[in-house]
Amino acid sequence: MARDTPSTLVAAPALPAAHDPRYAEGVGLVLLATLLWSISGLLVRSIESTGSWQLVVYRSASMVVSLLVIIALRHRGRVVAAFRAVGWLGVLGGVCFAVSSICYLFSVLNTTVANTAFLYATTPFFAAILAWLVMRERVRPTTWLALAVAITGTGLMVLEGVEAGHWLGNLFGLLSAVGFGAQMVVVRFGRHLDMMPSMCLGGVLATVAGLVMAADVAIAPHDLGICFLMGSVQLAVPLALFTLGSRFVPVVQLSLLALLDPVFNPLWAWLGVGEVPGSLTLLGGAVVLLAVGADALWAARPLRTVAA
Image 1 (cartoon, rainbow, N blue to C red):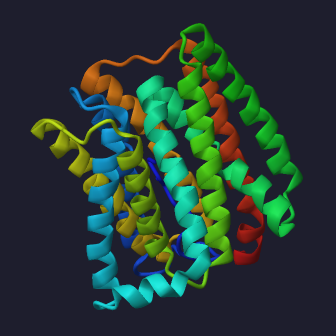
Image 2: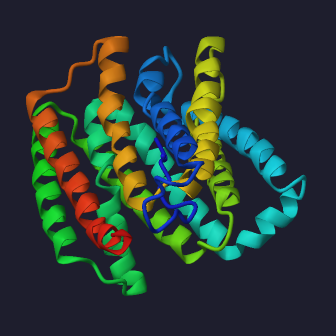
């Protein structure tokens, strides 16, 4: 997700769905969505000459067009009604999504793909903290412990980023994670609604911001094609796939499958453009992924007990 990976767009089954005939289909859809999200860094690195705000404009605009088509199909043409249904929550979620999306792009442009991906993996922790502050939702002690471990890993990446002159990119990466964490909390408020129109509103806001900030909107045909891929194939299409697949996959498994994004994102950048992350980035990223994965597995323990 941004790589923009909305892990709570649709309520998933509370218990493992291994006996659900559509469970395998759901896992396949979620895996495909995650793999499509993971090519974000490679696509950004494939841009040849376009400026950052121009990228924001065309990436966001293509996402908006694609999402409008998907929303029209999902709601059988009642697009206006779908946008009205999300109300002020949709606008608030759109603002959070726009901030996260813009910061994610600026992070990739100012640091390594690996740094951005690993920093973005801290999103669940920011979502938990914000839910605790705003909604007074209880945060498990194990989550606080995992957060402390993740902060250690983040510190290693930031340290290497400062030494390499990439501190700004690391800052944008953290802001992107905070923005999407806030968006996840908004989605939880409106969990009874289809919040895809909120994502579309976020794309509109990001497009407007880009138009205001960009010196001009000229773009080379090659870069325009890349922006179209980013907005549609890498953002809108996997969003629809994830939304469909998550209906048949437990939330904990969704969290673990989403970890494939920060794993594959640096891999595609390495294979595609030869970008090799530093040793501290890899170490810090491994610590973050371990913390997120362990917290998700620990959260699954009550579900396994109930299932038994």
